[in-house]
Amino acid sequence: MAPKTTLLALLPLLSPAIAWGTLGHTTVALIAQSLVSNKTASFAKSLLNDTSPLYLFNIATWADSYRYTAEGAFSSPLHYIDAFDDPPTSCNVDYKRDCPEEGCIVSAIANYTTRIAAANVSRAEQEKALKWVVHFVGDIHQPLHVENLAVGGNGINVTFGGVVKNLHSVWDSSIAEKLVGGYTVDYARNWSTALVGEIEGGKYANVSRFWAEGMDVTDPVASAMVWARDSNAKVCTTVLPDGQAGVEGKELSGAYYENAAPVVEAQVAKAGFRLAKWLDRIVQSAGKGYTTKEVKEEWVKRGGVQLEDWMVEARRKRRECGWECGCAEGVEGHVH
Ligand SMILES: *[C@@H]1O[C@H](CO)[C@@H](O)[C@H](O)[C@H]1NC(C)=O
Ligand SMILES: *[C@@H]1O[C@H](CO)[C@@H](O)[C@H](O)[C@H]1NC(C)=O
Ligand SMILES: *[C@@H]1O[C@H](CO)[C@@H](O)[C@H](O)[C@H]1NC(C)=O
Ligand SMILES: *[C@@H]1O[C@H](CO)[C@@H](O)[C@H](O)[C@H]1NC(C)=O
Ligand SMILES: *[C@@H]1O[C@H](CO)[C@@H](O)[C@H](O)[C@H]1NC(C)=O
Ligand SMILES: *[C@@H]1O[C@H](CO)[C@@H](O)[C@H](O)[C@H]1NC(C)=O
Ligand SMILES: *[C@@H]1O[C@H](CO)[C@@H](O)[C@H](O)[C@H]1NC(C)=O
Ligand SMILES: [Zn+2]
Image (tube, rainbow, N blue to C red; front, side, top):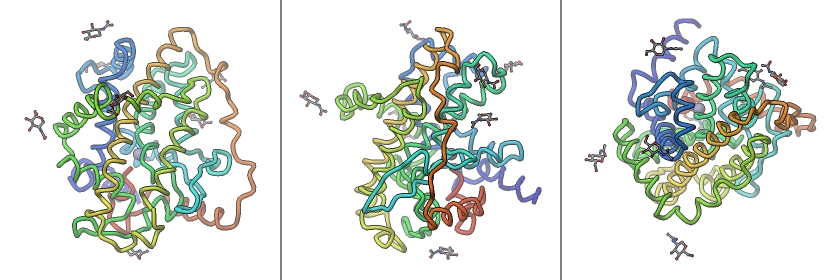
């Protein structure tokens, strides 16, 4: 077990086929860097002890490495929420139903949002909290991170450009990479510059005004649920418009890609924009002596919903899969 864990922990650093996952996360981080206030930038640089021009970029995928360590294994379930809905007929996400005892991406965003600037949290833990929020605000914008079906699409085999993949990894990486041409820092930098231009004066200039709706740092679960519902809706409209059978075993780099790419791009732009606004609010509140007491804490009280049998089975399957979920089809499917 130990040697295997070590090898897997190294894989993201060694293999370009896996290193991609960085593209979405690093682009989101760079967009946020462009849009945050100077006060937020100084706050983050200081907490991260990184005054370089890539201070958020540098930590954007930390959470995906940390989850493979013994210390960070508990954070594996925090990268997603398994919405027990029924795409494409019905898409919906319900915090009390879908977020289990071990937590989910919504409870994690809430928890770590309150810990970034909390006086009774150590500096080291505040730093981790910031790294998690930067990463999870990215993940929650990937529709298959807000979907239970086939373990978030990890169990759906497809091909992309003739290569066998699972649907989750196609949405994590293949679509974005095909759109942009690569996954290295230069690609992320150019993509983020282009998307910031679209937000400030291009195709997203009008709509981005609405992207901050529902954002309230004293009710982080309600805020993250707005983002989760937005993502989850894309499962019905764009990820699985014809259900699982519409993609299973199919080649997705043609018409499917053409339809999906604009959605992937808008989700990345939205995530960067929302991350910037969210961090600004956290830092503003911190300046006002914000304490976790002022935060609505119902988010801790989740569960209490009678699950249907298939939901119990789906949750068992996800837990059994654990951090190795998707491994059978190649490691890339579950890196994010
Ligand atoms: C923010 O910082 C940038 C460069 O670091 C500077 O050019 C700009 O004037 C600052 N803005 C404000 C409002 O202080
Ligand atoms: C910050 O980084 C500098 C140089 O990279 C290092 O010497 C210092 O110990 C770090 N401080 C903290 C608090 O980690
Ligand atoms: C919040 O995060 C801390 C640090 O990772 C963790 O120990 C704690 O269990 C979390 N609380 C909740 C309610 O998720
Ligand atoms: C990034 O943009 C610059 C300037 O337009 C260009 O010269 C460079 O080739 C681009 N890099 C990538 C990887 O697209
Ligand atoms: C934004 O809205 C204005 C006013 O309604 C309109 O004239 C403009 O064409 C819109 N821009 C885009 C990119 O949709
Ligand atoms: C910090 O203080 C708040 C408010 O008093 C409390 O709810 C919270 O549990 C404390 N957190 C830790 C990590 O001690
Ligand atoms: C997906 O492919 C893997 C091997 O690449 C295979 O083990 C698995 O059974 C396939 N799943 C489905 C649902 O066809
Ligand atoms: Zn992740």
